[in-house]
Structures are given as C-alpha cells and as structure tokens.
Image 1 (cartoon, rainbow, N blue to C red):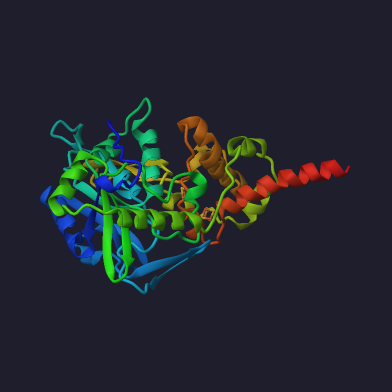
Image 2 (cartoon, rainbow, N blue to C red):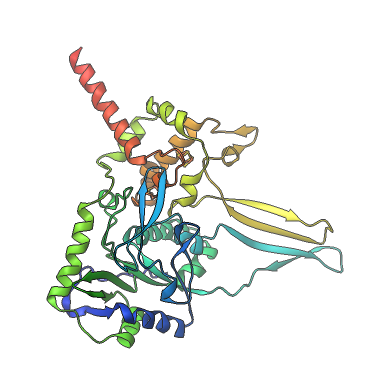
Length: 391
Ligand code: SF4
Ligand code: SF4
C-alpha cells in the first residue's frame, strides 16, 4: 500500500486561504465524494471523535484542560473550531475497531457448519482534524498491521480509503510531549490537506495546503485565494509557539538501552504501588494494538461467531499460556507496557511506540505519568553513579 506523503513546509505558493465561513464547503466537497465525515465533537463532557454531518457539530468555542489524571472542557474566549488538543478517542477506533466479527457460521441442511464470510460494505471515512502526533500514530500502526510479513485486512481495507484533513496544533495540552518524540506539533506527512487555524484582528480563517492530488482536487473546488507571506508566516508562528509550550517533556536519549539496563530497577515496585492495572492507558493509546479472540455460539446451536476485540497487556488473562499467566504482578505488567512502548517497539518496528500524545497520563485514574517514570529511572542511575563516586 502506498502511504501518503505531504509537503514539508507551508510555502506561500501552495498555501491557500479558507475562510471560516467557508469551512462547511470543504465538508460538502467531501460528502459529494461519498466520504463519511468523522471529526471531533462534544459528548458527555469530553471532545471525542464521531461521525458528523456539518461543521456545526465541531466543538466550536471549546477547549480542554488536561493534567495527569484529569481532563475537563471549558469555553474559550473565541470561536475556534480546533482550539483543544486530543481527547480520549483516537482514530484507531475507526481503522482498528475495538470489536470486529471476523466470521460467522450457520448450521446447514447437512447438519454441518457453513462459514459465512463478512462482506460488509465499509464507509469511506474522511478524518477531520487529525493532529501531527496522530498522523505519526497512524504511520506506526501502518508498520504493525500492513508493513510486515503479514497484512491485517481489517485495517488495510479501512486505511486505504481514508481522506485525512490534518490540523496543525495552535496550543499544547498540559500532558503533550510531541516535541520530545519528534512527532509534532506541525503535520509534515500523511495528510491530504493540512490546516492552520488563525483568529486575529477580527478575522477567522485557515491557511490550507494540499499534501496529495486528492487534497488538491478538494482545495481547488473550494478556494482560489492564495495565502500571502504574512498569512503563512502567522501560521508558522502559531505552530512554533505551540512547540515552545509543551506541558511535558521526555529525555529520549539512549532510551532503549536505559530501559533494557533497568529491568530490575526499584522504581517498578514504586509504580506498581500506584498502578490499578485498569488498562485505561492502553485503551486510549493511539498505537497500542493488542487483541484477543472470542468464539461464541447461540443457545439454539445453529450459529457460531468469531470476534476480535481490543485487549491489554495490563490484564491477567493477556499473558495466560498453558498453566497460568506469565505476568501476574502489576510491576511486571507496567514494566512490560512501558518497556515495549519505549524500547522493544524500536527493535520490533524501528520506531518508538509512543508519539507523545499524553493520553495515557490524562486518562490514568491515578495520574501515572510515563515521562515522570522515565525520568525517575534515569535519575536513579545518576544517583547510583554519584553514590558510587562518593565511596
Ligand atoms: S498506568 Fe494508570 S491507566 Fe495504566 S493500567 Fe495503571 S492505573 Fe490504569
Ligand atoms: S504511550 Fe501515552 S503518550 Fe505515548 S502514544 Fe501512547 S497514550 Fe500517547
């Protein structure tokens, strides 16, 4: 599968202006092309991703305030359409759905079972408002599901037909650390169109740039006004300012070796005292991909089904092999998750498993912070060296 690549910079020559009042035109152009729109929307006190029909369903004028173990939405002073960061959902729920029926079987007249393949027609999704860290998360899942020896057809069929409208971040969240992971806040690849939202001097508009022919085609239909130097510079400044205001940072130097060296670090006992093994961090993480399989039959004995469901390395059952579970303690499960994310993932997929989106910090009920845990392990080594020096 060819993975889209986008232009790298906001050049005046290929940047256009989309007025906020014309935003709906872009959604209409996508609907004309038979895309089902998926975008951020407000639900149950959070900004989540769901199908929408019009720009009115975007969280206009809302922002989110995030810290480790805490999330709330607040009204903004302006009418920004994308004035928040990422919420509890990620795009993986559309590309790698939480529950998929892989096949079903029915008893036939010869009293044997006949497999019925799932030939459901999938919607073509247009993702609206994908952040840079999320483009990196999709690229990471591409490596997992379609980049290796085996191809996951559930993922591939969904992934091949998406249209992606990325948004450069105009603010950083309290738990964001994409700058440390080199995954944002500016979208540099993987989009059909990228937008930067600008509200100033009574104007509300987007600097828009196409990353693919499909994107160019949509932009051509809705705007012919090229951005001038001042507008593109304003867009660049917004993203540069966001990069300076990350809520968190992670020192990634030598991180793989650091974690491999510290499998017996006492910090794992410390985090195990706090971790509830609830699996929230893996559910919200845009790159976690583990699944389990369930076979079911109905009471009549006429129908059987096989389902694939999201699973988590934090459950006891996940590491169950003949005779029992391998990872019985919270310590072993947290260590497995974090060491996989930040170290063995690199060996497996040649990239980090973490894009710095901050979701696992925000949605951890006890506020465990992966950046703090890495730092604690790093500092414990420094302390040991210092203590060794004194002796
Ligand atoms: S780190 Fe937090 S979110 Fe993850 S399993 Fe432990 S308590 Fe749950
Ligand atoms: S590990 Fe945490 S910060 Fe990193 S990508 Fe997953 S949810 Fe985001």
